[in-house]
Image 1 (cartoon, rainbow, N blue to C red):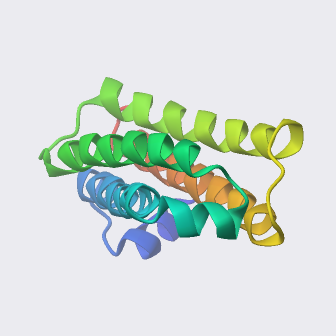
Image 2 (tube, one colour):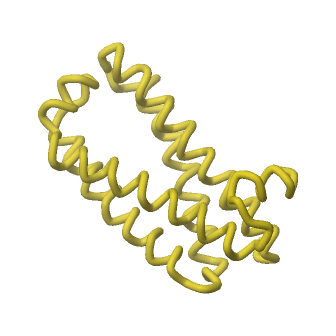
Length: 139
């Protein structure tokens, strides 16, 4: 991804700041999503056509994952290996989401829209984080 595009998205040209901002954004979005799945699993399950117990489990995982990503975002220089694990985890989440949609979930129309949208969002975080990590000399 071109450096000027990354700088525009992150509103900085400093690679470490850019990486921390992308990690922080991921942490907030993931954490809020996870908490919503836990707190509103019944209504969201009906809306998306996904079992509410599945949403509770996913939500707990996402809340913890978001907290971990948030912790990395607080580091002045986020360590390379944990950031790579976040990037790989985000890519895996995106792939598994699409596979689940295709192979075993039977979502409502809202779920059939939501699942790929969140998968693309998470994949986008991975691309931004990887690009920023490379710019910071960590890839």
